[in-house]
Image 1 (spheres, rainbow, N blue to C red):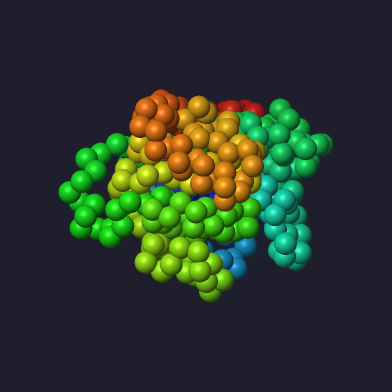
Image 2 (image 1 turned 120 degrees about the horizontal axis):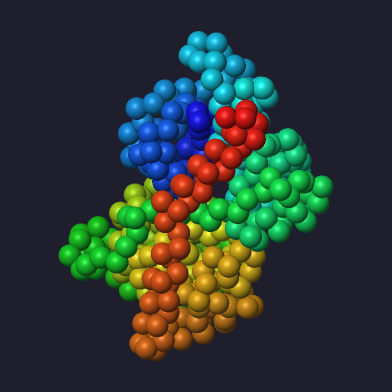
Length: 363
């Protein structure tokens, strides 16, 4: 089997959960010596996870305005006449008899939460086209599959597969003392990781910390803080009680997880929720919501809040002061995260690609 890896997820400089996922999948594919073409944006190497990949295969750089279909057609003319499976997370189908398309659907955030009408219509159209005409669809959770079938009831369910995301081996329990003091100034803190869009309930977390005043907040990723966010932070907890890091590496985030009082992740919707598993792998307690895919993915190793309010998060923080409860929650999290390995996720991706290749090309 020959693969095209069409991973424009690496077009962003900031580190993100999906970028981490693709870097792990690519490492697995490289280690298995599977023949592949790697197609990415010209700016991909700014991404911190992309910088850690040593890709010796053919790498095709493309401007974001290039038509990927014509680009790949040109690649075929120059390099090969083999049949390929295109594994992609950007919903840009490759229309060719020589290409079978496998797309990865992470969530339906645009369909459910995007308020900018033009962007919502455009992104929804691209995704719908890919879902209908792809040869196989990988959903990252059963909940995402359920959403897909609900939104697109006519999709052929025989081509829909569920493969859970994996967590990098960089996230693990470590010695928590020496290196931390030199890198991060905050000592007693909770973490908020990722985007801070409305459905992520970042403002509610800040208000909860106004109530639970004996702890600081470290914010990781999600782009620069907006003026509105800075004002909310300063008015509720003060500028000395929070700090924001963008573009930190996995090893640094692991250090933050290891030393945190808790990860607070009260999202209303997730296709998967990678930070939850990262935190569990690092022995960090997780406070999160009982919504969408989160209980499916987080299992018993999370402290769930049914109603996302400042008071409910405050009470969860108080609950974690119980040493025995906290230790039990950490152990349940450590047990849960073992389900999400690179080997398991990577092998299932490849099995699906091989199945599609045999189905389409009879090979």
